[in-house]
Image 1 (spheres, rainbow, N blue to C red):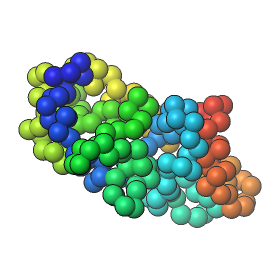
Image 2: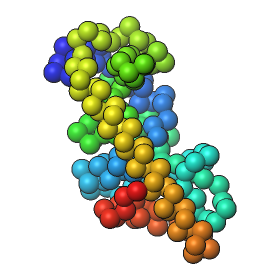
Image 3: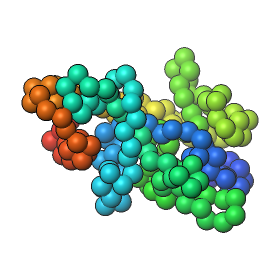
Image 4: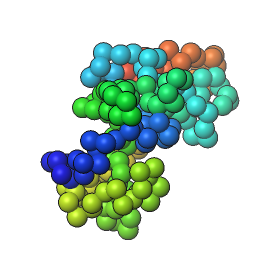
Length: 183
């Protein structure tokens, strides 16, 4: 085990399946953290996918939310680094989205638990050896980040409606990077 309670033997053999199979939805806070930590503009790592509650680019238009780009050649997250045949690691580990740092945990009836839907299977993790207080703290931080995210979505959409003109993804990303833009 390492300091985060993760089964190191399992992680050492990791093929990055979770980074290849999941669509990773991110918050405004995640976008800011990754952009700040990597000096990349969100255009380089974010894609907009249609959903019910996200950002609109034109008044009364469809809503989009923020997801990490997936590489066409591997299907993996844009930050997944292929390090050896069949092995991969996160290239922005220190700046990764909160949902990634909380993986594979969730809160069930107030207790930290292993998600049942992990591609590596729930038995790949030893809950008893994990730092549950750290995971609980980070899950709560992620929930707070999503609350902030929804407030920023509302403020952006209100501004789009008031200006009555279509906005570009670049304008949205620049808005998200503005540190004064909190919900």
